Length: 431
Image (cartoon, rainbow, N blue to C red; front, top):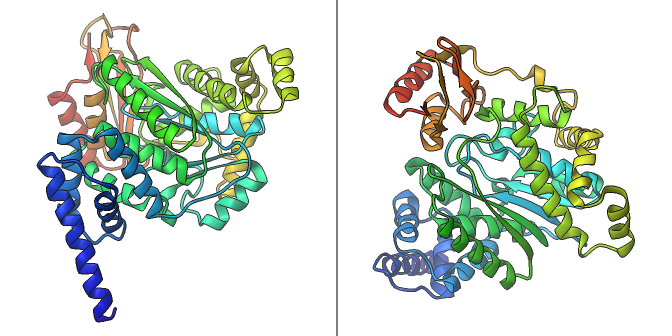
């Protein structure tokens, strides 16, 4: 790097530092200031400490709607972008619900219906993310060219966007937040929308769960999130539907990469022991996304769906029940370099096991999702793919004395001990 370039980089870094200081004292940032921060974070020139200061400023001060727009735009502009023709569908959950691995079910449903759905997912901030789970089935680190080729061929992919510079600042900030196990509401919006837009999405459904032990605890906060998502979507001309729903317990029974993926495959395979709550949630979200896309589809297709399936929920259900979604998922796995013959029964969790048994006859009243997240992390998830928790019992289910309430899995003895200790200090079940 010559002297002139070095001097310019010093100026750019100083502008970013000045902007962070300004935000830390509660002042509003303009686009130039926000771009300088995103640019320096994307190039990994601020370092972890200064990046943490910026993440913390957003958590404590929050951002105005205009700042949210600027941040989303800057995060997109400092990275790569993908372009597709026609309707490009996508779905995202704000997270916070353990086991909520609906993406592995929704993506093949939407692709089977004939829509493009190139899914870019983040690594986990807490126990597991879609990218962590999909990695059980196939590689998620693919080149931009490979992704374009796969989507053109089979309509879908499920990949990690951090590999080829899609909203690169986001993944740097996520790594900072992972250590603290927090994520501000505004950061959630910026992270999700920047990646949707960079991936060329035109029609998006956002899942916003709220509950006492989730990221979003109150309905009023969920509604604020909804309005901000809609504001950003309008600025970028994206069709969006934000679905708010109360959730008081995990979705599915498996928590951790292998166990969550196993649950999702059971739904795709339509096994007798599949988690029905995960299936219902997936069909609801898929139905809403299909409805959003169908409004901008040819009238002939709209009439066909109405006459054949009744509505888009019926369409999504049929695709799942008749095995088209499973077939599409196997195509995705194949194209991404995985084993298409994988089955849920072949996915085995960690060999170090401990069953938590009930000391009395009782009924499970509630499950603390935050404490469950701490437990799964103590067991080694998501870095240890086979570590996690299986919920033998969920809310409202009866438990006999000596019966297993949940099963802890880990890849080593140390993490299993940590899991037992964590469960004593941070109880998961109330009964």
